[in-house]
Amino acid sequence: MSLTSYPSLEDLLEEARHRIEVKPFELDEAKTRRMELAEILRREFPGCRVYYNGSVAHGDALTPLVDVDLGIVVPDPEHHYGPGKRGPAGLKERAAEALRNGLRPKYGDLRIEVKGRKRSILVRFRDPLRRDWEDFTADVMVAVDNPTGRGLYIPRHETWDRSDPETHTKLVLEAIDTSEKTYARGVRLVKHWARQYDKQALCSWHIKALALGCLTTKNSNLEALEAWFEHAIAELTQEDTPDPADVGPSIKAPDNDRRTAIKRLEKAQDQLREAVKLEEEGWHVMAHDALGKLFGDPAMLPRPSQAKVIAENAARLRAESGPARRAATMATPVAPVPAVRSWAP
Image (tube, rainbow, N blue to C red; front, side):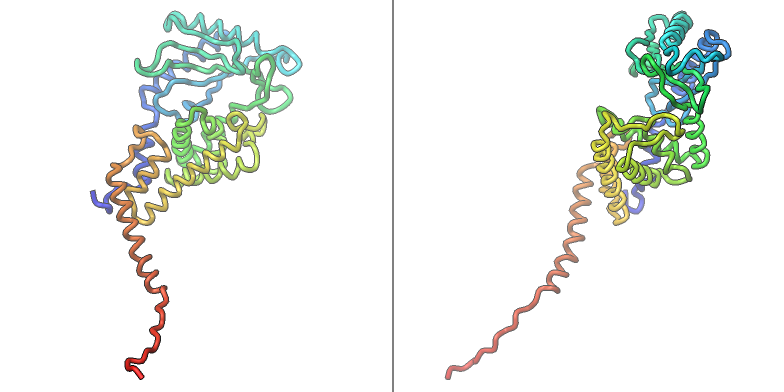
């Protein structure tokens, strides 16, 4: 392949994005299971409000899709629940038992976990979407309205926190619309980049919250990545990320370690900038290789033949050394030749 026809970084990112985006059969099955959960909870809590969040609702799910998120807002007209009142344990146990009874006829040996979980009920279907994939799970949040302000009260072990997941989903969907899907595409790429760490560089919601501050207009995949890393580093250097709904607490880096998160972001930004620089200089194979190193996943973005990378790097060094040698030669002063007498006295 000639260099003039070598795929651009944007072409490579577009191909990679398609490789990691959720497939229709995954999305259909996830929505079916989500609907089953919602119907059971509506029967158990008449008049409740169901909301959807997470990657399926936000349009940025990755393949393989192995989980889904939803919440219910339980009617509490007498305001029996909330900080200083009844805790969430009873509502969570009631919801878990309803889900257990409602899902068992279809899924059999499923498992539902409540104890020890900070916020949600975890449903383990024990029925993966494909045999060679991880089990499919669901996080189910049981919440009540906040009668004195915006947002909801969501569980925090035996008590409550304020949050506004309904507004979060609204903000994400608005960003997808105003950016003509740049937001979702950029978030999907960053989420996949974060997967290479045992502990994610940032959790999925943190990535999306930061994207709300920079991926709001139509851009290319490459421009979206450049904008996100620049914005994320600048924001985290100053403080934890504020809740986009301005209701809940700030979003913290993993283990509350912003320094480590920033280092990972800066390394990724350097790799991305190197790829862009190499492409601008015409070294397309090396640019491709630098982009592949950024994601660290050959199934998502295969790196080029290393023999081709070595050959192009050698050509680059020759091209750079030629002008350097000429410049050095021109800049080297020539020592004057001393006058000598050609005859003896």
